[in-house]
Length: 288
Picture 1 (tube, rainbow, N blue to C red):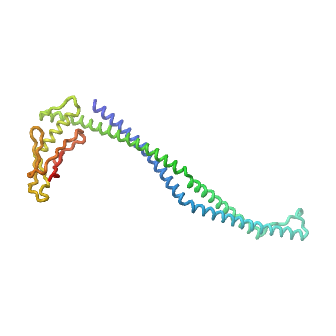
Picture 2: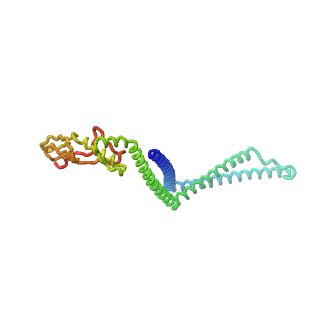
Picture 3: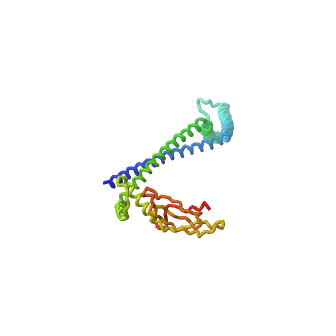
């Protein structure tokens, strides 16, 4: 029954962890997008002098094109006026037989006039877009507002991090309890075989007492060494630990400068790590 509840809680915590990380990811994406906007803004800001020169050049080009367009229209009007005058001199009134007002020259002028119009439109569009860029690049509030948005989002990220860490601790605790449920029969058997007393009202005491007992057994006869021979100190450097009936660990080298520093194994079963090569504690030879 306990195992079913633990597995259910683990699934619930893992689902919460997934949702929190997903939401955190979306906020991080928003921050990245805003940072890119700021980079674009700063790049535009640096380019403002160049943009203004471009606008002045475009306006100069428009004046030149408009002047050329005006000259072409004037030239065309001169030709048409001449056609009308020549027809009149020949005694042909306009209202009776209108003269043909186009010829190869007027058609050539029309084509050139027509080609100038889109060029002017293109220049005006360029000016309009560039002025918008300048307006954006010189907007003082833009940068301030974006930085404020980022600051607010970063606070959200910190909030998510706290919740994710809290959920991680919940998952870790549940994993530890699941491991205890799985290992409890073996620990009860070990405690009985070695006459280990533990507080039955304390859920984790059996694991602590058994791990400590096992750890002391590993330490009894554990071989290690010191570096006492450095600076010409006379010492074998080899140390074999021994543990008395009270759990006291004797681990002093021949010259007495190096001694074993005790370190208890962790109470959390999921962090407990003892094998044939690893024990908790270390030799301290800093006193030589």
